[in-house]
Image (cartoon, rainbow, N blue to C red; front, side, top):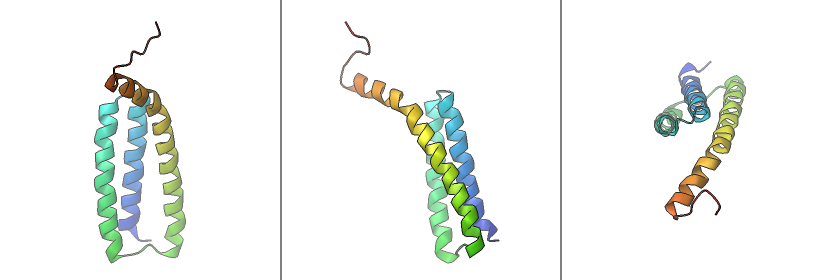
Length: 99
């Protein structure tokens, strides 16, 4: 098993899971911080992948990790929608309450 590349995927998954926990808690500053950490990990993964490749049997592990990351991302986006709508309303001077 090619541990180093899979380690990157696993680290990205952990950061994604931590982002989801922060989003569930409404801690959007932490979500943004962890999003930055994910971006760094993804960049490092891309660099490492230039020099090595996953073995065929490791692609299945990678696929399962990616599926979990995508599920986390979908839930984070769902949780962020009301927050983003509120932000958009504030930016455009619209009140949240109806008169």
